[in-house]
Image (cartoon, rainbow, N blue to C red; front, side, top):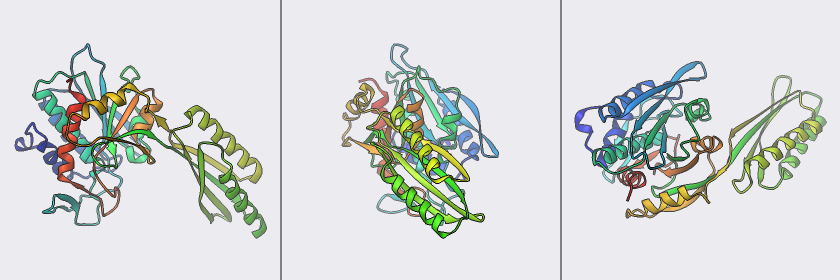
Length: 355
């Protein structure tokens, strides 16, 4: 990054963000963006390391950095992801009213380059101002848009670092995600045995989505001809109000019952992300208390879409996912306001600094 973009204040997030937008970084091809971030953090004086991760046919790498802090304080993991769902470089437009958007067919990529930029700016403020802070472990993950591949493959995430801030929620700045839904998908394939058989399977699957069990909701999202037969895809959401172990067992029993009743030729089930709940954690309340020192209103909410926070929770961490302020992620209409970057930086500084 250019030296002029390294000012140690909240405006740094905007400079970092605009620079990252010029780098194409789809899942599996994040390394140029990672090198830029790594070089900046090394210049800040942080130790930097790389963790290779296989994503599809590509080899990428999670970027880790460490800011030593007061060893008497519990360490914190701060996580954001480097990849974007779509390849390409957006034609960045900065409007007079402060909104930043793409002027071509490539989505802006604020999910999650805005989160990465705010983390870098926030950590810079904390370190350069000499604020008392806990040991900070920074993880810029890869492959988040492909089922959190980077986090799931990591061997360096440890439950010894229980407290985590994930900077990746599609929500207004000031939102703290205190619980997240889980989701699974079930793919079924059936041979062609006539229209009556096809209709009976369709009806059985529709009925199955209505009796999946407490805390789970299901939907038949696809039912189409395929390979001299037909195939179905069902989506299941897990409420964070039900313990994940119980919800997962209910789902597995439900899948077994569907297979028994409809006799598919082939079946495949995958948990895209588990549900989690940190509403009762002292870490959530501590983050909220710290952030409420700033003028931005703080609210707590649930998140239906999954992200790295879901998998971090399954590894024994307490993740608080923070609203980044971007809107319409993954679409041409994706945008973020410049003020969101400044506000988010201030909130991260507050969360990572001791009073």
